[in-house]
Length: 243
Image (cartoon, rainbow, N blue to C red; front, side, top):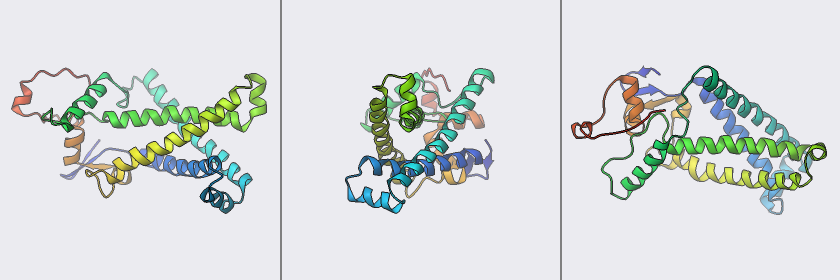
């Protein structure tokens, strides 16, 4: 992490920015080709299928885009797991008990029962819950998608009931992921008053000093060796384990 001038701080590397946008593009294609098959009775879905060249072409695009998605997701998980197990990385995205406490503190803050919002580290509880939802959901989509691509082969090794179960899990998880991205992620990245008209972090990799102090004060303190607490807060006991 490096400071840029007096106002901006490097938050994400170029590799993370590229990874984010590759995932965004792949996700959009999967949603477009997948949900158009799920809701094939609707005219909009039929238009998408016909524009892509028919149902067979749509299925081919969906399946091979799924391979790209697996190629992005699996190495990400393996690299993080290897670093955690063998290189002694301390991943800041791990959900900790403090995240649940932070959620409660913020709810009380929004209700006027707390004077200050929760003091979060590199990733707050909302970002962590969304990240793990994507990771777990991604694994589920990869596994069920593979079963649906080769059902006859899968049926040789698994009970036949796994195939319709995989179809239900695949389509419903896809719809859930779509709704989470549209309602939660896009709101936080575009329409939230704190970033409107758009969050530029995933374009530039930098975050403003003011925003980091507001949203990630513990990370700021750790990076620059300063304390952001007021004198009153300094005297208050605090038990916290950073991740």
